[in-house]
Amino acid sequence: MTLKATAFDPALDYKIVHQDDCTNTVNVNAAGGPCRLMTVDIDNAGGSAACYLRLVDEEAVTAGSSVPTSTFKCPGGDTVRVNLPMGKYFQNLNFWATRNSNPVDNTAPAMSGSNKLLVTLIVQPE
Image 1 (cartoon, rainbow, N blue to C red):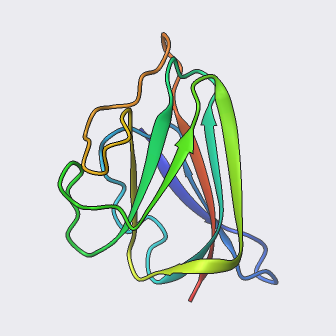
Image 2 (image 1 turned 120 degrees about the vertical axis):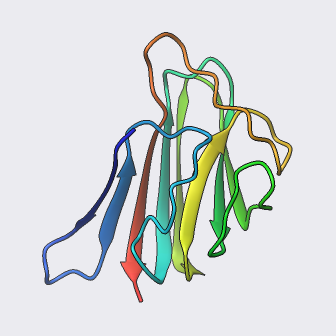
């Protein structure tokens, strides 16, 4: 599981946060500080069932007990992109994915074979 946060060209004030194996393990303060979430990309093409990306804006986060600030659903075998034109502010952008819709679910996403759930977030540091 690799989490990467990469800045665009210095002339642009955005960062790409990419997780190449998003599971039910929390990615803590993924943007490295306060930010405005602009775009969410979920690639569940290798998933055998729907998954739910959970985002929480708290310092102390526990998957399965922290109630998400936002949740994005992606059907199995599909991809989803959500653009937030005005952005959504996060002091601490934490995220993970689950298999079930219950907000406090902590079941790992259902992936087929060696496929992995890919998540890419575009953020604007504050």
